[in-house]
Image (tube, rainbow over all chains, first blue to last red; front, top):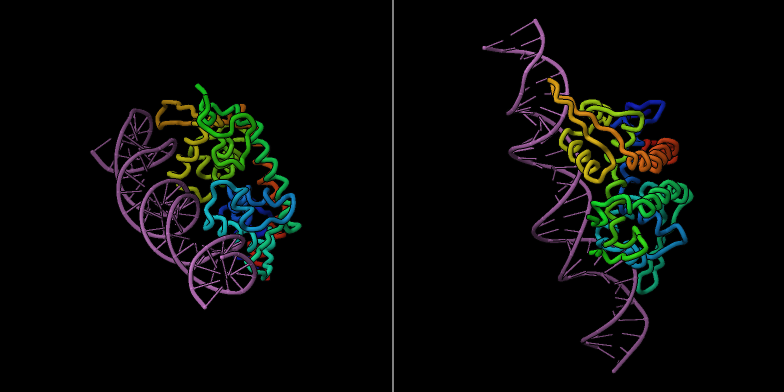
Length: 121
Length: 121
DNA sequence: CATCGTAGTACCCAAAGGGAACTAAGATCC
DNA sequence: GGATCTTAGTTCCCTTTGGGTACTACGATG
């Protein structure tokens, strides 16, 4: 039983298809950076906040919760003191990292072709 | 003369690096869909609005303007009546489509692994 | 002279993003 | 035993962005 209109074949161009929502989740600056930050092993909240330069704790929490909800990352709490929370990629998250890493790499590799961003004359 | 702190090597994890802004532009639902919609040839505003199911004209205009500003798409006005405006990819836009297409394809191919989105039990 | 089609803009409201300050819980210092 | 530290957030408030509906401009067409 489906509630979306896209019964068999999925299409990101269909607003009611769940993969549109998935695209919305992944095609997001903070999601792309957060997943990438976990690529080489688990990280704690503070480490992620440092790595994702410029993110506010509120937005980072929201991003991580969304990713966790969808099964892209795991959140493990170590009830030590001070509290210790570790985020890590799931298998699904690792897979999602592939296209996201390609996008990040493209941005870095091609930034010089964007004069309006690099402040060139 | 640069105003950003990331003098030589670019890094999306540096908030002041221009490629962070580029990532923000590309890692966006509407950008990814709009660029993809132009992959197989120029399209008019109305055609894009139809293709990007669920987009409001206001948001579509804003998205296209941003992409045009950065040189990813061209906007050509044919002063016929009724007015006719055609959007097409630049060479830069075509290149950017590669990682974005991969991301869209990943979403479609892996949506079944997201029970929370597909409404599975 | 009213209507149509195209490509938007204007207006208004809701949601998300963002910064700074604050909280909780216990260990550790003095 | 009270002050202080650390970690992982939450809360508040404000700004920005997203989103829907209605409206405009333009001349051709009936």
